[in-house]
Each structure stands twice: as structure tokens, then as C-alpha cells.
Amino acid sequence: MLLWSISGVPFGVYAIAQQFNIPLIVQPQCFCVLCGVSWAQCLIYGRKWRTWTASLLLLVLLAIFAGTEAGLVFAIRPPYSRGLDWPVLLVGIIAFLTLISGYMPIPFELLKRRGRVVGIDFIFLAIDWNGAFFSLMALVTQHEFDVLFGTMYALCCAIEMSMVASHLTWRLRTRGIRKRAKESGKTFEEFEEGIEWQAKGIDLGKLLKRLTAGKTCEGTSGAASVDVEALPIPEEVTPKTVPDAAV
Image (cartoon, rainbow, N blue to C red; front, side, top):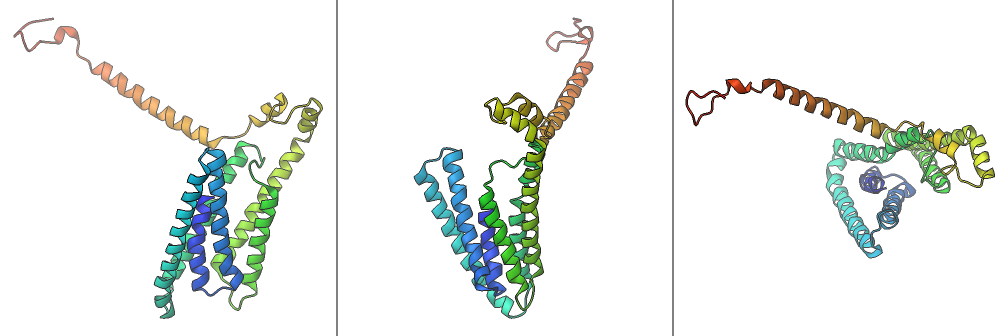
């Protein structure tokens, strides 16, 4: 959520510099604020922050975002009007990468949960998909189609549709387990068969930690064995305090 909120800054700068339609200029501002509010809610409900602390932090961040966006717009406009395109293109690429990077944890979660989507409201997802789709259509109706942002909107639509398809596939595959869990008066997470089925997911984070820990242990044991082999035999040690003494 924080990454998406940050992406609203270069997103807005690019939209203003390219003189997009008014809705496409307003959209990144709303997107930045709403994602920021969602992030503050995660701090309050997930990490048990105080409401005033999270709200104050959000207001400070939004003020910084607004100042940064205004400064970049005034800094980029003069060279862009003289035909210098690369600063605007760079801002657009940063916006593209920042927005898409917010989706990066999703494939790992889907692998871990075997296709199940957890923690995402599908009504919100549908609203977001419609926003990306109609923004793409708004770009199509312009005099000149913007390839960079057209690609970004198309990717957002594809990623969100793949999430829905993944969850529907999960529901189809687990329909029997969920039915038996409901008959026993338990949820899928509490039902033993559901726990066993879910445990077969691939947790890439744990795998990477195990590989890293294994390499560290191998390096430590190797170093320890070398040190033991390199130790001198006690009979060959000659104390410095007593000349020509044998131990």
C-alpha cells in the first residue's frame, strides 16, 4: 500500500506533464490518498499503532508527496516545453516500476497458499480493475496513445484478473474439503484435511532462508574443521616463558 501511495507522485507528475485528460490527472491524486489511508489502517489494525500517530504520519507523508509532486511539475515543464523529453520519460518509468512492484508479493503468496487469495477484498479489487480498465480506454480515446501508461494499465488489469482466476480455481479444487469442514462445524483453516492440503504450498521465503542457513552452517563447520586440523600437537609446543622446555 505504501508503494502504491508513493507511485502516485511520479504518476501524477507524468499525467500533468503529458497533459492527459482531466480524469487521468485526478486519478493518481485519489489513488495516492486512498492507498495512504489503507496503509495507515494497516498500521492501526495490523501493527497496533495509535490512531493519532498513524494519522499524523499519514498527513506528513501526504504533505511531502504533494510538495514533491508540485516541485517536480514546475521543474520538468520548462525543459519539456523546449523539446527535452527524457526527464518526463524517466518519471513515467519510475511511476511504472513503483506501481508494478506493489504486486510483486502476490505470486509468492499464491504459491504459498496454493492459489488462495487472502486479505484482499474482491469488491475493492473489482473497483480497482474497473479503474485500470476505464483509464486504459481513456488513453485509447486520446489523440495520441501513451504506450508506457497503456502497458501499465493493461498489466494491472491482467494481474488482477489472474488473482480472481487463481482464487476461483482454489475454490474449485477445495470444494470437497470445504464442504466436509462445514459439515463438521469448522472452518477450512481449522479442519485437519484443510490444514494438510494447505501445508503442501510452496513457501519460497522459508526455502531461501533454509538455503542461506545451510550455506552458513557449511561454511562455519568447514572453518571449524580447518582450525582443528591446524592445531599443533601438544608435544611440539614450546612455551615462551621457559626456553627449550618440552610439554
